[in-house]
Length: 181
Image 1 (cartoon, rainbow, N blue to C red):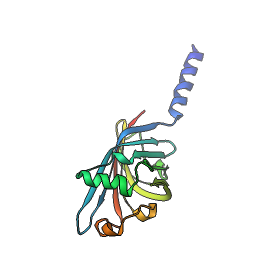
Image 2 (cartoon, rainbow, N blue to C red):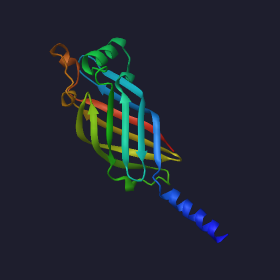
Image 3 (cartoon, rainbow, N blue to C red):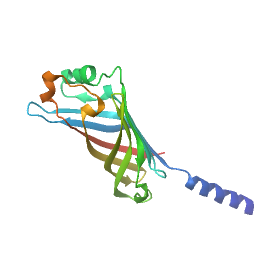
């Protein structure tokens, strides 16, 4: 009987020591660009994300063609002329929440965090640092962040004819609910 209890305790402690993952396939990533001519906004509700609550490792990946625009012509130009979505179908972020120890996944609350890693857009990979929050709600972790990117940093060519219609910096917003697995 003592052996059974000991094995059960060891198994339970080993399970608790394993990394806890939070996952979504319906993460929300949007971007907004304002210019004197018009605002450009698009939303993608199909971002995949995984967060390892023990190590802070985080991965986001999304299909560029999953961004939806208010105007079909904007969406067409975005995919064909700027992002070249057939050639560069995905964007991703692979990194780490550097201060993951600040987040208590056993207690509901909102925690300010910083992620560092590599973001790949349009076939170009850049080192980035992104501020954000992780909000723990029961068996979910809600990840939010807002940051800016420059299209020129990712070799996204903007034709001279329309360069004044597109902001030099694009504001990106991430708001994703990840479920504990």
